[in-house]
Image (cartoon, rainbow, N blue to C red; front, side, top):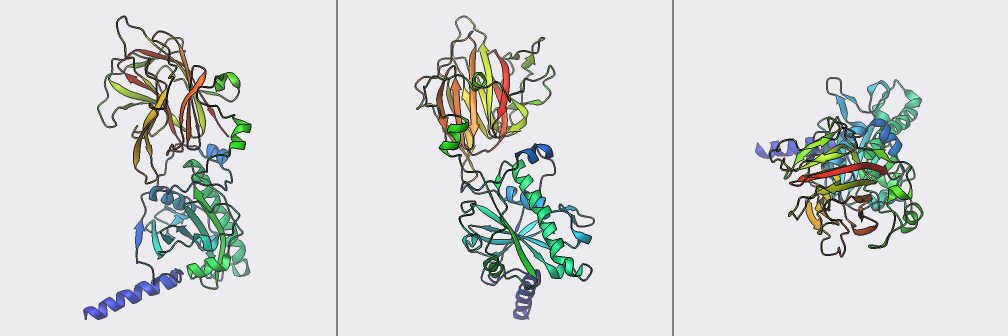
Length: 439
């Protein structure tokens, strides 16, 4: 009896895969379903900003995407947005939903099932190279999404127009995915020229199905030296140079907090610790952001996130007779909770370096510091005004202090985040907090 039940279970699983259209490798792959994390329905980037940022990118880093990112992208393309009706994120003629989105990555091939928001493994092999047609770009991307449509799911109501509807619906879904990628700080490109026959074979598609689109997705590769040199000349460490604001005053956004500090949030250091009393205020003229230094250790972070950008600020410690070791910092690409942080240390006499915790290739935070590389931090003594800029472009962070670059890192693992400043026991004033986004 047990043997009969077991055989029935196997039969049902294979039959289900055949009905859905899961492929030739389904019987050889390890049976596996991956329930994806719950998708976010509120983000930190407006629709208009995502539209403005969307670009076709063909060069990618190999850094893996998280299940949260993959799930968010799939939800944007074909996820269920109304559980009561089953309606999805992109429109479908008469709600017939003929599309299936497949995920190709190094550990196999998966079909996305909107119901249950999950991935179903259909192969445990890396089949990405079989469906792409180099040199179209995207070969290094960690994930490739393949869109297919099945005419048989359209029914008799559309007749000869089935193909037309399928192509239209792929366009809707692909644009959703592209905009979600932009909102997540990721890059993608749509590819119509893919190896359709190879993809259909890998996926085990019926004759009624069409392979239409591929979209490689990942973090954009670092810009070429030629492109950077044209748009933003590379500066050697220690080489005298004006600030980015001095060099070009156009395109900057003033991010100074208002009198009530709205649009900025206090974050305790370390994350999760209790906050001390309020120690931040804006002066009556609205020109200075003041930290009294008597409310414990915290970050004051702008609620808006930035990706590739320059953060400009000027600061001055209040000098206290007989006191030394002044300490504070400036941040870029921090996470909302402060667990990911990239800090320019601005202590007098020992500042001018970068350190923090950034995501590694495995998704885990790792500590970094440039203290050993900095020969001249260039921070002036307490009581004098300093000018500082941090440039974030791709995975590179560059710190410029009072007339020259002091250091840089090449492996920032967070593509976007919050700018901010630090309070740590010393009275300090900040002014001219500005951001220029890099296109």
